[in-house]
Each structure stands twice: as C-alpha cells, then as structure tokens.
Image 1 (cartoon, rainbow, N blue to C red):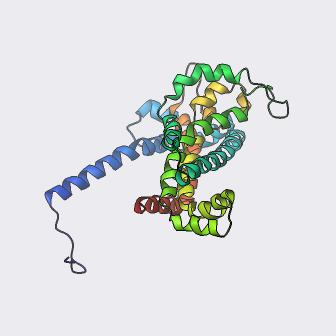
Image 2 (image 1 turned 90 degrees about the vertical axis):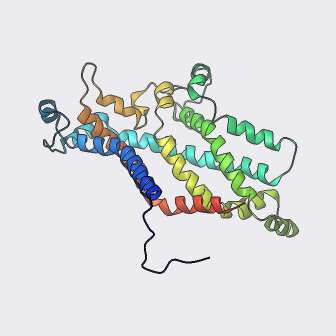
Image 3 (image 1 turned 135 degrees about the horizontal axis):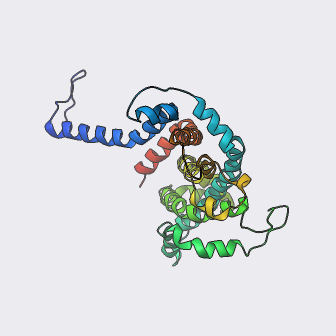
Length: 293
C-alpha cells in the first residue's frame, strides 16, 4: 500500500469535481430555506411590501420582540419542556428495556417482537387520527393530572403518543447496538451472580451511552418539533407547545410572513443549541455504531 507524500494534494479528477459540485449544490439547497427565513425575519414588512423580498434593506429586530410577545413563547417553551423531557426519557428507557431483551435472549418471538416495534414507524400517523382522538376523549384521568379530567387536552396524552411513535426506531437502533457488545461480559456477570436487572443497568447501559446520546439528540429534536398531535389532541391554548403557538402569529385575513419567520427562528434556536452541545456525543454514537459488527 502506497502513501501520498506529505503536503501533496490529490489530483482533481472530473469525477471528483462533479462530486464536489453536487455536494455543494445539495448543501446550498438544504440551507437556503433556513437562511431565507433568517433574512426575512430581520426585515420589516413595510419595506418588503414596497420593494419585494428579493431586495436588501429595512433591517430591524422588532419582529423578534413582537413575535415573542404575541405568541407568548416564554410560556409555551415551558410547555414544550414539560412534554419533551419526560417523553424522551421514557422513550429511551422503554426502548432500551425491549432492545436488551431482543439482543440478549433467544426465543422464537424475538424477530417478531422487533418487527412489531419497527412496524409502528411505517404506519402513517394520520391514519390513527380518528381512533386515537376518540380514545383520548374517553380515557379519564384524576383532576390532579389533567384539568379536563381526560387524557385529551393534557400533557400526558402528548407524552404517551410521542413515546408510542418513537419507541420503534429507538428499539431498532439500540437492539443492533447491543447485539454487537461482547458476550463475554455477560458470561462474566452471570458467573459473579449478577441478576438480569444488574446486567441491564450496570453492564449494558454504561456501554450504550454513545448510542443513547445520539438517540437523545434526535428524539429531542423530533418531539420538540412535533406539530400534528399537539394541534389535534389539545384544545386549551395555554397548554400548546411552542411549535403550535406559531399559529398565534397568523391573522384571520392577513399573515405577516416576516413576523412568522422571526417566530420560526426563535422556535428553532433550542434544538440548535442542544445539537451543538451534544454534537460530540452524537457523532461518537454514530461512529461507534458503524464500526461494530
């Protein structure tokens, strides 16, 4: 195997140039809506109405101040925290339990169980709208758990529906990750008298931290950005998560797109912060999972 001398660049072949152009075009196309929304949010509606959006000028930060006050983002951000944090923790815990059983125990329903959890991700959520809505309006809850005394119009309803739809993907990822762990670790644990629970909690879970960190980053983003179920299963405006509160920026006969863009940027900031904070763990989880097996 020959190595290239230090300081010497690889020749630019036509295929390599085409690949770079393609990747650059895809990157620009992917970033364009985000950059356009950020640009629009920094301009006044009066200026863009006069000069059009394909122009420069009318810079202002008033859209962010107005969006924060009109949509009451401070209160709705807390609502998103109440829904996202328990949903992510519960999803990862339940998925890790199921994945541990699938990865470590051989029984005839092993593949069927994995297929059952994975199939939930293949079913369109909209197909379950009517039965879930009717079920949530019939299931009672104590008054201390829900103001409506129903699963409908409660944080618990959104937490459960997110857990139900996200568990399948997490089970699939964690079960494949756990299957690649050395069997000798569990044999040694059984020799030392470790119970199944200790094998799961003290042996498996510490080794799965990179995969759990990667999944936590994805799950926080997906559950936090969820819009459909919050709109369907909530009726009290004060309980809406922050993504659904963007509807407060739309008028009945008129919508200020600059104001909505500012609100969208504010909503997206927490997920960006979480991603950059967990970026190392996210990449580490992906690379470790790819190198196993």
